[in-house]
Length: 227
Image (cartoon, rainbow, N blue to C red):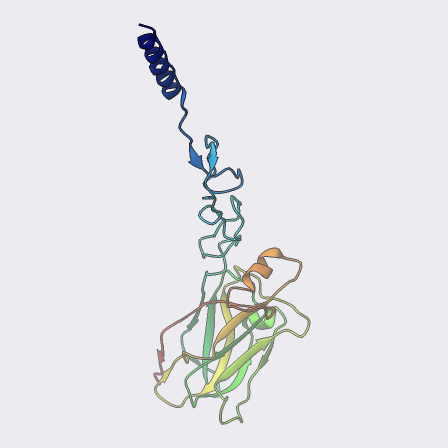
C-alpha cells in the first residue's frame, strides 16, 4: 500500500511539472530591427535590418522615393524638356529662319543642341534665351560644329521653370530638304545650388557629383523646307 502511494505521488508530481512547462518563443529581441518580436522569450539571433529600411538605408526610416525614383526628390527630376522646331520663315534677304520652341518645367542654367549635320547656323537671336540674359554661341566657320548652338549665362542667370515659347531663332543655310535635331550631344542642364537639398540629391542621379543636373530631352520632328 505504501509503495502504491509513493508511486501515485511521483506520477502526480511529474504530471504537474509537465503542465507547468512554458514553451520558449524564439525571435528577435532588438526593438530597432525589422522583425522585432515583443513576445519573444528566447533570442535566436534572427534580427534583420534591411527589409524595412528606407531609401537612405535607414531601418524604419521615413525617406521615400518620389515618382521619378529619386530618394527624397520633389517629383520633378524626370520631367523632360520638350524641344521642337517651329514653322520655317524667310526674312527680307530670303534667309531661312527657324524658331526653336521649348516647353520646360525645369530651371535651366545652360544648354547645347545640334541641328542637321552640315547645316550652317549664321545667327541665333531673340527669344527666351536672350530675354533671360543668355549668351548664344555659334560658329558658322567651323567644319565640325557649324550646326551647334551653345547657350549659357556669364552672370549665373537661369531660365526659370514654366517659361515656354521660342527659345531662340536660328538663321541657317540648310544642307538638304529638311531641318532636324541631331539625336546626340544635346543637353539642358542646371548648375547645382549647394544650399538646396533637392539639387544636391539630383546631382547624384547620373552616378557622380559633378555639380550639374542634366535633364531628359524630348526632341521634336523634322521640318521640311518648302520654297
